[in-house]
Length: 110
Length: 115
Image (cartoon, rainbow over all chains, first blue to last red):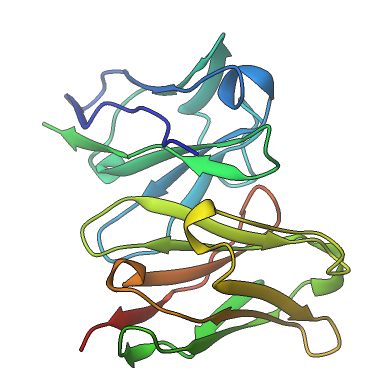
């Protein structure tokens, strides 16, 4: 049950687009379309932003999108806004019927 | 409105036990898988366990197998996590979350394992 691999940090200017990667194996990310992404602001509970690789829950801005290629999933945020500054975590179902999170990525809006 | 409220956290000595509760409201609790996720201070999220709607299936992260037990009481709309043989590395904020996709989260309860 090794954690998924995410970059420790990414940054972008307001209005730009950024992409956060999430790399696993064929036993998790690559094997199932059950990848989720969560946003967490300091001191707050996580918020679901993307589920099943690319689906957006009701109420989540369409500036957030998800995709997957092989063992790597990606979260793209377009039209960056100041309020997007937060930590982002990916999560995937695994072949052991368990779940695993990525180590998290700190997004800084310059 | 969906609400999840955790309770039961606190300070416990290594080797001790604690039982966390999560009170659910605003949705049909018995229709959803439920999960526990934890976050050590300054660290990332870690999935701990989840339980099927009727309690017939339970899964755990390797590091808590044999020490933690997840359970639920659908009549009381409540989720539980019994934690035994606690270790310093179990120190974290524990969140309960709804569904396999974890679309709603509680505010968390802090568990501190220290002598």
